[in-house]
Length: 169
Image (cartoon, rainbow, N blue to C red; front, side, top):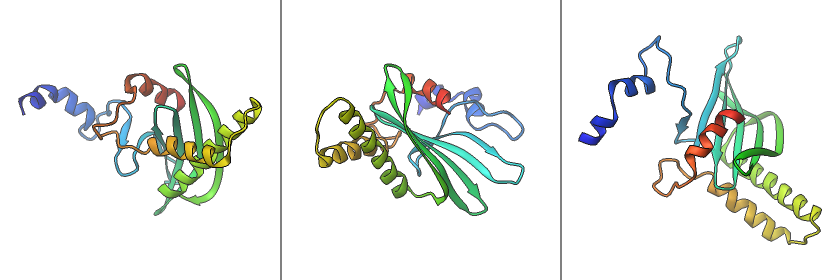
């Protein structure tokens, strides 16, 4: 308890959960329910709420652009980024029109997008690989991005990735 009290100073707490009217400290927000960081949130003039969700694994970053209209959450697009050294490179993007957001939809679409990227990359290199192997590898890397940030097994290079979340967003 003493270490928590040392770590959680009043300034730190007020930066994370400020009193109304005080700006919040600019750090990505982890949403455990959706297993992603929430960034770039805003409300439109018509009172629709928009936000971007970012999840990542050691191999890729998945970015969702979402909108809440009345009581429904729609997904506007999914973007898949791969690491290029220490920078992110867009490898796939899909746009949607009035597509209800569900975790299962995001998983399936992300897996298809990663599989398409892998298949095209292998083909461009003249390498043959079965669709089953490609789909299994795509499923594996996408599933790794749905791991909880709060999980003790979460060992990603967070200090290097957090700045990329701000750049991508």
